[in-house]
Image 1 (cartoon, helix red, strand yellow):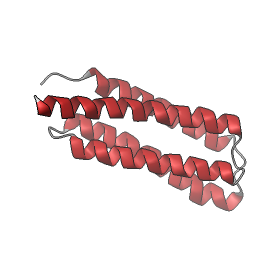
Image 2 (image 1 turned 60 degrees about the vertical axis):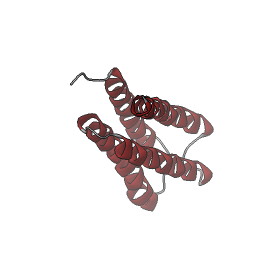
Image 3 (image 1 turned 30 degrees about the horizontal axis):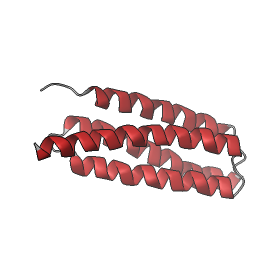
Image 4 (image 1 turned 90 degrees about the horizontal axis):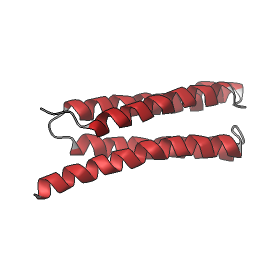
Length: 121
């Protein structure tokens, strides 16, 4: 079975997102109790995103896994916005972080569109 380049591209972008997430969490103003809860939730969401991308690449039927990935991306966006509203991250960090999440989301959307178009043929 031929590997789709989209799979490799989205995995690379997700790894970049994971790297930036660690940087953002280490250099932000999270309160001590939030470092353990909110930061753990953010890290967990990023791990789940990586896991779902790998899972989607290995599965024959990818649509459900990609839909789960879409849900996890939206959950991560919500956690990042919550961090911003509570003043733990700056506007610049919010923009940079969201751009990284949106890149993964855009690639995931095109991957899902390709699958739907392929099924329609």
